[in-house]
Image (cartoon, rainbow, N blue to C red; front, top):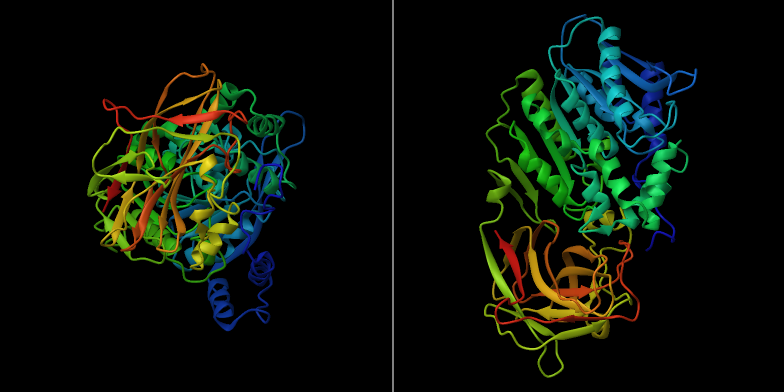
Length: 550
């Protein structure tokens, strides 16, 4: 998969938009004959005490004389009592607010007034897509004001909830609007610059996927330019500057000063917004916070809840708002701050903080291949030998088969199987442990330290960890890229690479394999084809891999 190859046309491949539309129609008309009995009963109960209507949130013109309006839907109780309000900005999809219809019903039945709206530039909303820019923040505040005006009473408290695109907007609104007391941000980001450029490496596949999924949206000229710049490797400083005001981490002090209760939910193999930049934001929050980590990829773990099926991510979002907006004593404040679903279909683990996820760190040293085999990962440095391989040719080691879709296979218990013996050692460095005598829990962020030389001014390395069984069949644990720009050919480069956070149990009898190559279709590589990489340890600075253990 590359930015030039077919990209997903939606970030929600299993979303049944027609089914959600039928729910919205039944809310309006009261005709539930085409719905399942349980859903019909839910809607009949809702309509007995809540008014549902489609609404238009008015906004000022963007620049000309035509006003911008936001398409939305409002669930307002008839009794006139003051109650909490939940505002839900839409994800990155032309389905708009409709994505939230099933969950909005649940919130309304539990006593919340709810406004869901479509972000500007998508579907029935006016304006242009600004990627969580200042107009999007102002839209969120205006949507809250509009909801209060339509309901006719001041809310007792305010929460913002969003999935994907709506999650970032929700955080940004909370930073700028003190009335917001709780946020649920599902499949979210913290630092958009690091999500697009990781260790100076462009995330071309994720940006191409965003562009493809917004094919029917109206992107602003600046948005189009930024996306094109990422794909074409141009104007990097401008893109990073553009990302700053769109990154919740920029406003972390404001979020903390507002004492916002923040819930994050992300996937271990998140390909759109890799987890480490989100974790940096999470760890800097000082108010009430909770992190849910799950198997899968972007928006996959919460997908069943979007269509109204039982889902632990959405259940926690409801519990979070019930506690922080309604004062319900449901013990969520006494549970672990971090809740992790361990790959694959492993246990659910709770830890008091992210720092408590890792119990200890084990350092393994990279030793050169002996007798034509792979290099080894051992507990003692050897300082022996170099590992040399060609740059510019892809190998069987890769992040995933496809953004989003591979994550749904993982959710189904079908992670990609890698035939690690097929990884061409002429184009990659490979190091492997001895078979592990017991199940080994990896929890946290692995870190790789090495020094290399390349006979070219620029280079990209991609590091992968695999768990490999006796027959050489492996599953990916985690990965990360690194790019060195504008150097001198032949110059030594020392790198410390934080691989993406992981929660993985390596089975007894399996090996941990480290692979380093120079090309992955998920990344924009600076690798010069035909150049040569030499990874050369020294006695004074041995190469090592730090594994975080549970």
